[in-house]
Length: 492
Figure 1 (cartoon, rainbow, N blue to C red):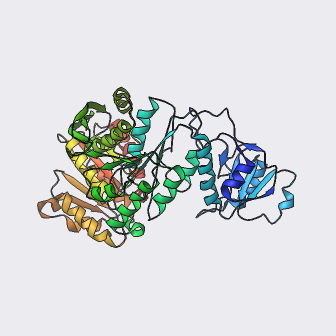
Figure 2 (figure 1 turned 30 degrees about the horizontal axis):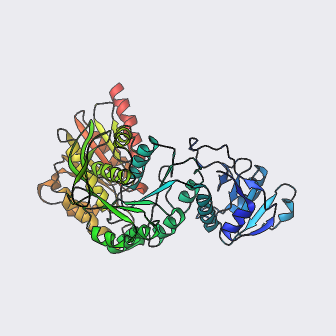
Figure 3 (figure 1 turned 90 degrees about the horizontal axis):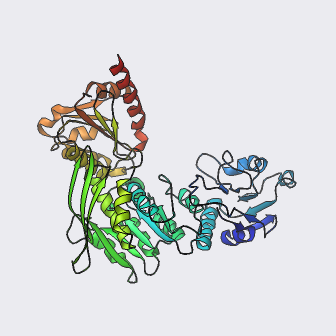
């Protein structure tokens, strides 16, 4: 992080300076946007990774309370500590620790401090946000790959998109950054509003609206309301990039402020950037896009090669392109950036196995919309191979879980796959939803040992096998075991 004074921190957080020099600076002007360190240098919420001179926030989390580690933070050289509770033996620390700031809530203080830091150092930075029900991490990474080829770009790493991860990401911003791209995650109403107020985006991408976290978010309509909250926090003259094919497109469109511009993306020829054609196979994705103005006059025709696969990534790529075109990024940089794109882990990643089979790891998360896109992309990408799908529970769906898992079974009934392997308590409902002769192709596994054996028995050299489940199903561990056992069997 670049410097903030203690006085600026106190003002931003409405805190009380208990001890210390208000004019002392925290941070280092030698920090460069090229460092891309995590956590950002100069800021800490974890005494184990704290470096000398850091600003330490004693966050109260679900598992740990940072106040229990104040002594550790001091001994490791933290220069400022933000706390909501004074230590019982404060006098023990006085000779070692220069500054205490007391705030009402340390997590809120982190968010307030991040907002103040962003306002101080953003200068001419164009700030992007990406949110939506699924695809947001991939779209964010695609945008980052493109923009990084143009100018210094800062971004939220991996999926640091919540009320702690996003504020922390802001502290990697430096005055030299031309672009900043932040992912906004949510599982309830109000969360997108909170996070988008911190970054105040110039450009906001909403990837789609589909069922997600319904146990906490509520209905599909409430999900649309929650994801639309970012639009109220667009800066004047900003840009909203919306999914033209989505059932909630008109709803989202009506939420765009009058002083902002609307662009859309998708397969519809009504979209500002639409997919004219795409070709996908195990070698990658070739994407043909058309960019048009409001009068449907063609502005650009783009041909793109991406090292990713399927319809889902055609839509992700289209969203990223629309966002970059909105800010006049040169087509050359768009093509160059996407050609070099590396997909995030556990998001439709191809994993070659030692016996010649291909495993597709799409296990980061799963909801009704994302699993259908994943299955469709899998079928079209590997049309010439034997196809096996391994599905686990879609979690956090609440009262609609049984209905949605049965509906997934109905969807699977029409897919050209040779084998369906199911695992998880909720996935018993998928079995009930599968119709006709397709029931003969289904295996339900009672435990993880059976699942591993079943998968192994169905991996052949000419097969492709898709893994898809919610993150808490821990399918990544099964995949590691499959890789290990495949290597062992080939070496025998």
